[in-house]
Length: 410
Image (cartoon, rainbow, N blue to C red; front, side):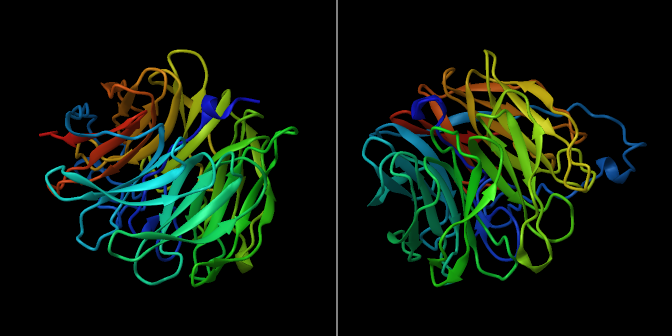
């Protein structure tokens, strides 16, 4: 089994302010219902020039242009990153976690790429993943934290003024590597999904903590999954208006799909072989056929690779389309980098200390990756419009700093 430093963390999806994965109301992290994160909704199919796809004239996508706008220093081993509006000013703030200081640190967005250090909250040992959603339904986004060595998921309530306070500690299996928040049973209350590697036997379960309202959660219910779950996304992959789960089995080299069922339950896992050791997961409609697709980062040789699995609409996926990126890719998410309305990918690469931008062509294929150096081991990234100009920017956690990249695509 890999050491924590071999595989940990990231992020996020695409962190949502009210937030994310899918379902009614606010949810968490890395799918593309981005209406709450100042990122356009890329999950809906769009047609080139309003023509049917078989008549559309292929147009080579324009590249994205990013420049460094800010560097936030003073961090110690920043492993996860989240953009979420915590202060009520309609500007996305940043939340980072430090595996050395064992805390979550808020950086308030003052506009014009000026970030000020805000609230700090202690966490169990080795916080490595963040998610967001309004778990107590007070209208303010909250934050969930997965702590790898501490073996716990911590829920931090937001007060709308930039402060976070611990309200619940959730214990499932061992060695959490990712956390997702979403309404998995359709009752209007957000649930927490713990993605936990386990130890010894590798672990073959996910931990589901049903939301009880008011920031309270039931004890964990276990869901069978592939060996060594490392990441997951909550999304409706079969278009039945129920939330499903797609999780990676890092140690077993598989991915698993749990389909949402009537009555708020989840079906048995459908497990499929993946390419090498899959890590974190994101979702969007990359080929614009109306069915959600998924993308995963893979452990493997240099160059590293991302796998895109095109959805068939029934909860199953086509074989992986492998895309080369930087070395040791980890965090992954979806945004519209070049302003063409088609979903693109960003990937944080640990060993090459850069972030890869993969421009989507809208048919499930992508342009060759653009590499942007960030001067540190890039574990996680998060996309939002930090300066309010209508273009989606990108923040990257890189060892002892956060690098904020301005989107200057014309």
